[in-house]
Image 1: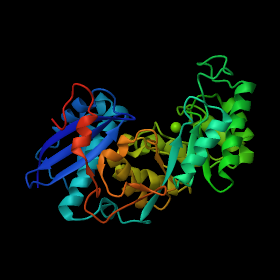
Image 2: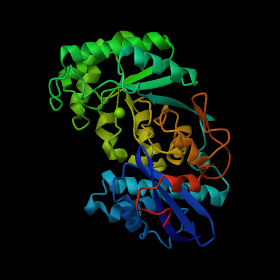
Image 3: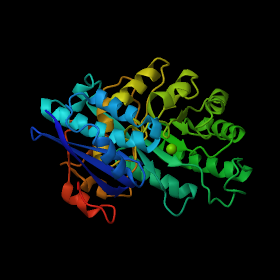
Image 4: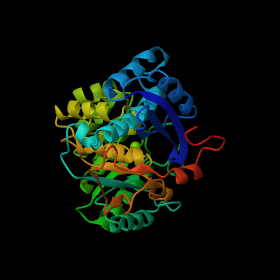
Length: 377
Ligand SMILES: [Mg+2]
């Protein structure tokens, strides 16, 4: 079997996702998805894809390394080059699954679990009062989710003196505590609650937030400090009983190496359809497992990228929970051919069908294309 054509489609979602479709001389086709590759991702995928035309798609890891090493001098150690390769990698896994009649999780070594626990990223909307957040939390738990996440930082907060300075004000901290207290009160003690700071605080401020939130038994506090300085992250982690999670902007094993080896976090959160794909994601999970660090992947992808993440999450022992970020974007469900809808009671159940097990709804994808682009042109 040989790869004959690679096509892409940019579809609106959380920003834009890029779907990748790979054709072969045997008529078998695979489709993948990546996200956060930025404008120009279709050109990058087109250029990388030309490197594997004529190759056997069964050699997924080899093709990944062929593309990456060919573009290292252009920056393919991280960023949108790796994201582009990731979209191709996920399409290759779908293709190999369809060629062999096996689901992707089986190709990755088999599954530890049949269904993947999702957490819902929530926003109260315009009214960011503790009550509005508590109401939203209850609404999402009523949908069946057993884990939820809210954004805690707010650059527009009147309690913030300066949007660029990383030091928290006392009023800002009080507002955060009030919000977390209201959410915890609303959902009770047994729903997992995570809070995200988006790396917008300095070390001392991050420590203050983490310690102030200790009474609320968070699932994690996400990225209290920016991700570039692992030692600062470790300082926050070592200061508090609140678990610290980070890594949504890191790429490949080398991006996670110091974070894991220095045990600077309690939980890692690679964004698999952005930072590496499924094979590399499994290797990152294995590296973390050495230190008993669980993996809770970040995910803002459309349905195919999300299902791809689920296959990796099924195939690793140390999976914790996977993000779903499309509560306010109902066209997520339109983009995939799935009946009943993919997420049931806060879980995605993997099927035994070949490849990713689900198909993109091309007609729906066409409706949400990036203006001026074409579907799998
Ligand atoms: Mg985050």
